[in-house]
Length: 264
Image 1 (cartoon, one colour):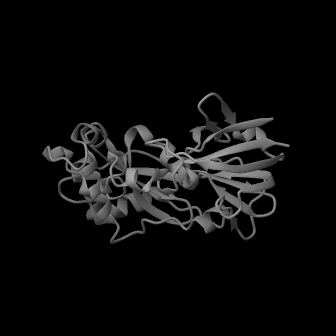
Image 2 (cartoon, one colour):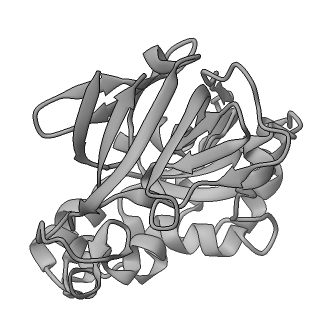
């Protein structure tokens, strides 16, 4: 069976375990059904997620020119504290920025490889946690716009990390933590503008990933260097496919790659 199309981050559905889907233009694939099967991934061409041209992908699924022009790749995406739509100030496209920035946002703690603080739109909970491979997470504050979430994250980063060790996450070398205790401990560092939005009555959310075998030492698949790869799928965690030979493939990191996926 063969599927073909441009890679985008896998869609997910909360469950025990989490369900993963690859969506293509004319088809979709429930990736969980490929566990224990031999899968072939073949890189065919590039397809920028913005202009659709066959140009090398620069970052986030975009070719270089689109990355620096499209409003969905503005600096405020990665650095929410740079958001300005609440002031009526445009970065690249004010209407787009208002739509994304002026909605409820969550500042959270997630435990993937270690406890980290992060920001996401409320509508993206728990999707964001799943994408990061977090096995547990908890909300700290819910604020009305992205800017407030951003300055809260910046303040908390002085007291807790904001990065995930993806190799550690994929080998499942992680410890459980009491996120409620961590949330309460961090309250005193929340900026004055956001402290009234603190959440003090919630519990951890736990995620169960469809993994049959974790890699002992991860080997990352780069489709530009290895355009055809075959392997037996043993798990899915975060946005990674995990194969029996310890190879891992970052689907989100390969957005904008047009591929063929065959089940052998």
